[in-house]
Length: 565
Image (cartoon, rainbow, N blue to C red; front, side, top):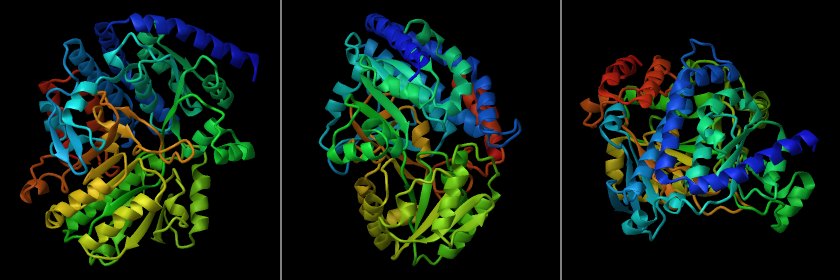
């Protein structure tokens, strides 16, 4: 470790120690003002953010995929800061942040809090989509109200210094993690950027200038030696990271053979609290039913999006489609899936190691089908010896696993297979025809309750849970340092709900106008985040503009673009 690294880390920690004293003295109104300032700065520098992201990801200025950078970049930070500010206002006024949010009992002795849509604009912009946060079993509605607010219930009781090890794939992850450390955990923060995102440093410095100036935040670049010096610094109190389970274990237990011995013995080198949002192998369960040709095409594009958004460099990217071997429309669906993968815009492999991981997948599976630079692997087996079920490829590789049975039999098998045989618990998608869900009745609801995942998306993509500021985001609770799976703890969660169990997202099975013609109460067209959406870049840029300054006048241009998708 060089002197420069020592000096960088010591200077950051010293500044944050002073900043923590100031943070403890900062009132709730002043903390809310800080969020408002971050919101204003994000709006001001959103264009620069997206242009920088495009250069990092090698996207051309006219790429239809730029919409991904608008919605998973500045839009996410704008909505996250605004939602947190609302929660602080509630606490200032002596209310709970969840006051006014409908709650209802759900299976397993849980309570569901309806967090989306929240207000008229949500209901118009994403009509037919819903999200709810489920508590852990045995938590009642009154307990939810009493505990919501987390660290902001006792703002003067600060939690020391937290280190955030930033992600290199989705560029709002690190900024949102900073806000969660500041507000939920009531800590000042050192953010160590992933080297992939170093080019974003000037943008983030402008956005977070008010927090940096007051010593609440330090932004740091550098390699692994800087991250190691930060997390092991004696005056750092906690760590949060986003990445892979392998990286997590190297940080907690050490690298190589020594790390393996430490993990086996349960003796971590890093003994301070660490939370994490890690990846895994996310499944998409396709429940058999009677689908029209348009349904098959639309849902194939849906699955392609779940895998190919950001070229598959997502912790939540679907990696295995679970379908019924006895579904009469199975081959038609797979034909549409291949075609949808082929239609999706090609893009550069910007994330390190992507080509090597694709090549390894193809070597492991001689039956792998190359669809351009993408890979489809059929014939997977439902057990832990199947490498595609426990190796996160983090690349444009999609597998297909078949289980026998009609809708009821298939779903009864799919749930335990996903729970027991897949690596990770970050998210699972379920695609099912409304008539099939009605036919299954309580069995469908029970299946949702039995799935052990941090986000469950029904006829939607779990990525929408990430984009929903008031939803919780993270692995299913219960993992340990020695079996971390998709991580420990949650982020986002702008209502500051104490210890949520999961988020459940629901969407329409069909886009408008077919949804209305078939009795679904949704006017949403093809979602703008679909990789096959022709106007996604324009729609999501306009949606970000709306998030800067919401108002009725901004709605018509968004709708006009969305309807052309």
